[in-house]
Image 1 (cartoon, one colour):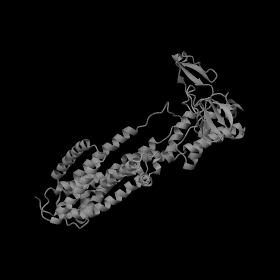
Image 2 (cartoon, helix red, strand yellow):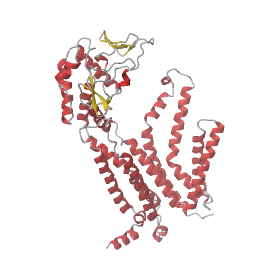
Image 3 (spheres, helix red, strand yellow):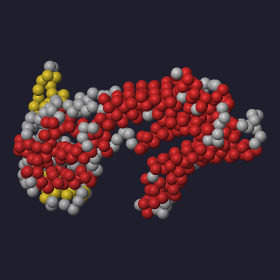
Length: 504
């Protein structure tokens, strides 16, 4: 029965048979699903982990195996695809048969390139599965607010009291005077090390402006003695920690008592980021600094000594894991840009295979050597001429020359001559012609914009065009894919005609 099915496929659908699209599609879908579920398993979060005790995942190993499997499957598929039979060589072909064949090559090449993508998409799916985007954003906002009251950096860590700084104004009512080593909030001076000058942890859900507004909100709560608002943040934070079975040795009331020191907020206890100790080096305190016995204590474990905070919350663990959750929603690894890379790689691979199929192995190898020699030659010419655009302009010229030569060969309708090499180079260059023109144009416009030495380059007459081109690079690259497919539709019929020409 199976042999009868094979026979019917070979006779009635020789293109499907010769490209092995049915079994290859089934195999590739299954393998992509396997990598997806591997990624889904690897995406599980361990909320007890932090940057200090993170067990590095197996991403590198999985990516290596995904590439290895892709190469092995590609080789196996090409063996069967290039295997000769009479139906492959002599069965009747319509005008668009070569385009159909290339489309199948593109489809299979795309599935082969997706193993790594499937793995990372599985990871992100698992991470996103913990909370919806709205809930994750809400939790990150709570964590960010609470981090203001945990040991961390101040709003400006690079102060130098011996340097004559001018006063830097953040807003009309909130400024930092580095010269005098104090901050101004709502018209009142506070010590630089005041609680009011603390930073918050940022998550990719939020931008700099949002974080600044959040800090200002917390400062306002402090100076206006809105104690319930502060305690509510602590309570929500500790509820999140409890949900993940993370420990803190303070509750919201104790936390508030330790940090709230109205009206100056310059005498507060440090709340540690975790109950993990840091290795204690006694020599660190021989340069005049003193061990902070108010906020820390030293404990011995074996022959080593560690510093521990007297009061702590699981900030390290929560920040580490919720950064992953935030990134999975706002900055995912798998996005339109990632898919674009996979599409371009698959497109290029399909053209390499297709060119080998429609020309010959000899022409294909000569083309590879020719491209390499031209690359070296163009590099030398670029060094001699010393013009920034020599190399890309030479490449554009070469691509256009191959297209013109192919058109002339077809119009003469005599013999192929060296057009086999030209066809290979032309096919390999289809995807790169428009991007080369696009980026050369963009760089030339930038040069024209800079030639006036304007202090504000946005006032240049070329700026709107430059900004438009920069903002739409991804859209252009997708357009280039569609354009290249249309070109392949036209070229495939021409190449079919070209294949009928006599050899030299």
